[in-house]
Length: 296
Image (cartoon, rainbow, N blue to C red; front, top):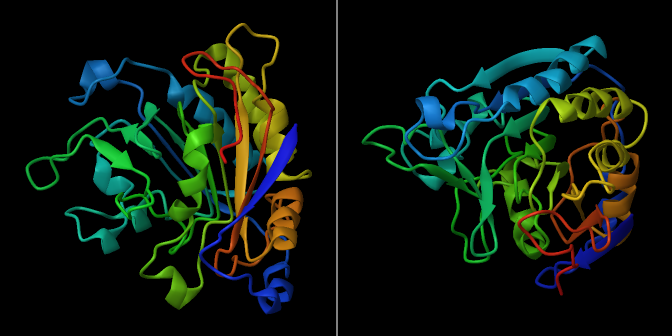
């Protein structure tokens, strides 16, 4: 497993903020939310095959309760549309992420995903009706397009159980989803860490125990280590390639966060984003994708 840090060259590092960024809060229960789409083909209008995401994610969700955290809601199918994941500051109709993906401290999402033009795109179950009429949620890219900005309300840890959620060539723009460009500079709230997969991930009963073990392990070791260890399957012909990603005001801040935050040792919100850093398995080669190569 290797690590990489990349400074944001457009903003100078503000070292004075590091001491504040490294402070911790007393250990306490997190509110936890899960969201999954299982019946894309059976119930949906946006394409995609049926999968058992709620079974896998449900193991993480229920085990978080066993570990003393507070369950805040598990959305499965229903009218799962873009409005549940998009930030209202985009000005788009129906956006209410504050009630869903940005409505709890630790959130896991399970749905079909793809990489499009340097950003992750998730497939919805419903297009949301005439006012929304969009089958996808898109992470922001370098030009500012996208609707998926997380952390300005409540979320601190985001887990993407989705193909291409952390594909290598998307990582230079991944930091953009960690803050709402309208609210975060005012209220100081930002996402701390996101985890996902480079290339195709695995779905099915054989992976259920990974999600239970991730929930247990991340209480005591870093969320990064828990994700990278439990989700990695190097011996499969179709390797699983987990990635963990964080932000910081400096290299030191970024790696201190990603190396030390657990579900029971949560730091204060990051300051202005000057750096992003991530962990990956070098040359990990998933199905439907090329081996992981750090982007330049």
